[in-house]
Image 1 (tube, rainbow, N blue to C red):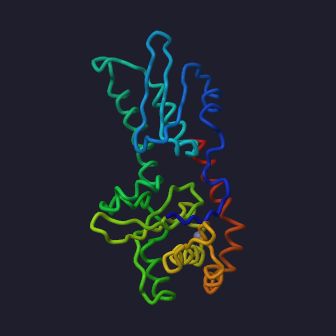
Image 2 (cartoon, rainbow, N blue to C red):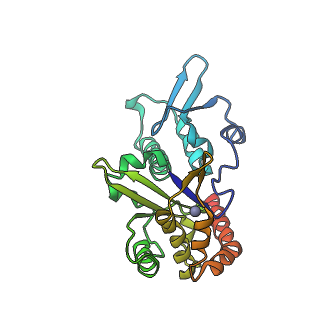
Image 3 (cartoon, protein in one colour):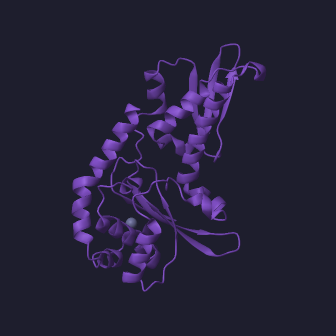
Length: 260
Ligand SMILES: [Zn+2]
């Protein structure tokens, strides 16, 4: 179960499809296909005779952000040399591309949370030089609104992401683990403390008021949830601030990233 709060409707950031990117990059011999069965890996087949490359990737990467799509394309287009001819540069480049894709898969594919709830340290992504200590924010909200009753594993989403979400997973020993991911755009010095507390409160409320089924549909932001959400002292301030500022932070970050 993943409850998503989308601050920015185009935050999946895909924009251009793989095919469009391949055309833009003037690549003529690469086909990308998507596999529902593939989860954490990707593979490539080359037909030597026609020198065509067929890249197969997990289906959910269809919506991956631009830099991940580019990394996969670059990986697929690496020169195919025998191991003796491979230079250190070439190996390092390959490894760096693989690392960025793997990092994305690890941080973003919800179905894999099960695999890493048993390795909790892996859950903290992009916490280096974080503006806010998520644990500190969580503790403050927990004390003020939840009588210190909630517990969760906390992590930052990608720096350019505008999506915060909460999910529930079972560890192998049967215990339930709550995971809260705060959109990376909140990890920014222009974000006021009240905003990060309010978004944390929203995600924590999903633990307190879990979704339920009604007429076969999953009700996530139920009337009860919405009423409770407004009880946060910064609720209105947060929503207004979000509308006025958050998109700018995301745009600037994406812009900077694309300039690099
Ligand atoms: Zn929500």
